[in-house]
Length: 408
Ligand code: HGY
Ligand code: MN
Ligand code: MN
Image (cartoon, rainbow, N blue to C red; front, side, top):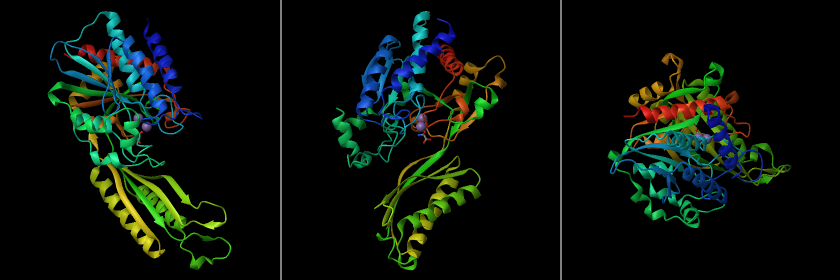
């Protein structure tokens, strides 16, 4: 097979995995769902074709393992199987398919490695179904907070219940903690989800670090009322308060270098045309590559929410439900990946910071980590139009193949 054939083979498997989705535009594959189960079936087929031993751990992480010499530590690869709602066919899942194909390539070349290799498909990185994420890598790193099992999805199903219904034993999570001595390092290949590489005409970039992130659940409660009979000055309009907070967050982020703030989800009750909104639940997400900047913004916006609620006679519930610190990638792994990706002149391999978060953020608590970005068309992601060109798929597999061969 030529290198181009490997990219086409990757696209074949990505197309099959994209079909493991709820109906509707793009890909919707949430953790511990029938769609997740279907994706595990396709990934198992692919991993077995590459000669990997396949298992599912208590966190719902599918593990494809290539044994090395007895007792040898493992190089770890992988990403997440889940998507956002109506997302793309590459985010996460491409980071499982490409390393498996790189191992398949080595197998066809008769190459044996002096270490073991694992490719991991984590259940939940997006944190779309439950207000938490990264359970799989956090369990391996021993940093998972078991209290998160009590968090519920929008249907009131707890994470614990969803896992049990999926056939998993959440109480076995603490036992997943890995011995760091058995982990040589972690590499995640992921589409950039931005336009930088595409604009630069590059297929591959090496990630220098991942931004920090925190998420707050905010509920503002006023009083639902008739939209035609209650004068403006007598209203306790929860949506007006939520709108004010949203604009305060936007203004703070616009005015603060390196800060991003987003109100991504907002649920209005009663949510009808002729009633003053009585209650609004919204998500407030804050990102920055500097943890101090992010935490200051979190405190400032929490205070702003209290001030708005007081002034508008609303009650406020606000809780930080998720946070992960900014994560620098390992200089040694960056160097190795740059060498593996170099296309003649190392200066050609761009180094790029990640504004998106990844499973890599959590794996950094276990071992040295690195990331490879592939270009994506127009920088589009978290959208049905997400697309990684064949040349970038080929370059990704080639980079992984060289990285494995060069790791001695
Ligand atoms: O939200 C993110 O940055 C990632 O796509 N989960
Ligand atoms: Mn992702
Ligand atoms: Mn994503």
